[in-house]
Length: 95
Image (cartoon, rainbow, N blue to C red):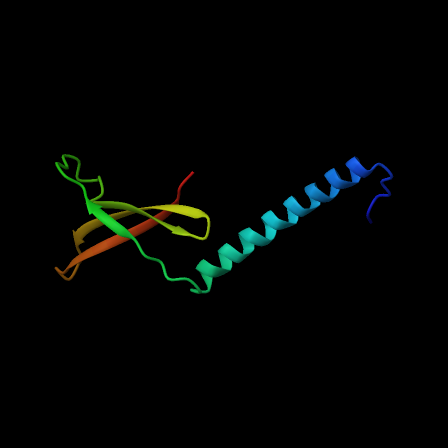
């Protein structure tokens, strides 16, 4: 139930807050659907990591974005159980 507000400035502040709240919720859901349903192509440009001394460090790094969210992308090269070289790519939301 919407409260009764008689002051015009208070009413405007109330509706601005309501708009911001619902805009945030709807925007986050739209971005989630774009990723989850595959509605948007995900493209990453990865750059090789040079002078890697730590084997646990990624071989490639980069970033990508989906909507307004930015993701860090890292890739590791390794040999799987069949002896085939594969690349494992991991995307994590950037704080």
